Length: 610
Ligand code: PTT
Ligand code: SF4
Image (cartoon, rainbow, N blue to C red):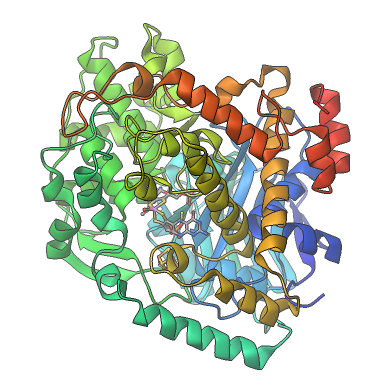
């Protein structure tokens, strides 16, 4: 087997044990890497029904056959576990030198279980794994932690760390690297914290073996060259994802006032062009010449790295129209290790609840200082912040009075920054994403606004499935950044050529989509195994707000989703996926995907349809 290291590192923090374990080619060929490996590992090794914050949960860092071999934008890996926020499968994709170094240390994945007695750093240096005392680092923010670890292990060490939010088990704490890379929205930082694991440091010195080294070098060089020649490259380098603010405003798709509206009167103040005026540098993942992280100087005169999601969720969604202040909130979230998307949601929810006088605390739209204080309260679990740290699903259930209607989440994971009052396709994307509401698997909305926007057509469902195959399955498992392909138009065939040079195997679209479908249904099986008889098709329905409360502003004023048409679209989606009317994979589908054992096991939790 060439192209994969063929080895996982199994770590038990309770007993300070680390064992390298070989895996077979069957696993690589059927699950590829990254998300595919994470899902298979969790299916095989995770005991169903465990508390996600208990030592029994498994935290998986998994890379793919293209990670670190020189392919453009391939310095990424997946971090996965059972999510404390959703109770189902959780993962995120993070760009970091750590991804490259983990592979060079000889591992395609590291699987961490147990709980250290006192805070530790896991240090993986080729074949040697150390458990290093981290008492002196516990309590530091993620930037300080990484800086101290770089002083010890050197500038080339790959580091992923948590901040105080992860230590305090905030359910949407994320994992941070390189002062602005963040991954694992569904609480992967809290899972690290629950294990007393402050950081993982990777150092690797192996040359990664590939099947055709010369071809790989040439293809990679050509890939980098091609990216630069793409027509939108120059603009991308200026704005990265930030131009989506202007697009969102024009398209009535911005999240505004807790997703109540979709246009923001101060959009131009927080958009891509406003950002350009305060931008000082580009930053990014390793092995990338697109470097989409926009570094700006914030209102605290510190550097902050901006992407669309951060700005929309900490800007328009909470009514804040001052970009430097938005950047300062973003910087604080990075330091504390809070996911900015879920954070923007809980903040918006808290402000709305306060305005509706459902809580005694006083919060207001667009107030920088009080919002910053509340963010700190969430990370340190003080006062009302302690309740918000549980995520909007739980807070809404506590508050009652119909608050669940405007708690903007799917399956407990807060919605990312696209309003769907007038975008049924995107609503279906959120509802059926692998981890809860996330756009990563299928950003269909930019296509949707161009084609019969407020329609519930079969064409939309097909487009979503095609996108989920490419992004949610293939790119997440390879593991490479999707932006060269989805934002600049690098052809899909490049990836089959990279894969052949890495592994010697001639994968094509059909083969790769088959793998992707296998991973997709396996992840669904993981969810169903956790929820058992509580699983219903209601799990795949977006928040009631979009169905009940039409937009009151902007060109699409009056728009809202239609419940009956949405349900019909969802059922058609299930059918195309080979799932039954509850959204559970059929026995025949699992068998056809080579998941016979999964079918047998799952049938013990819920009766599977034939
Ligand atoms: C991702 C989610 C996103 S998606 C953003 S901005 W985006 C937010 N970024 C955060 C941040 O920053 N700080 C913070 N404290 N929390 C944050 N939460 C949010 O996390 C990121 C890029 C981006 S920027 C996107 S779309 C693409 N996502 C990819 C993906 O998912 N898969 C893939 N194969 N390639 C991708 N390329 C792009 O990567 P989650 P990163 Mg992230 C400051 O992890 O959990 O999936 O949430 O990885 O290295 O930071 O790159 O407009
Ligand atoms: Fe990372 Fe952005 Fe480059 Fe993708 S385009 S690899 S997210 S820096």
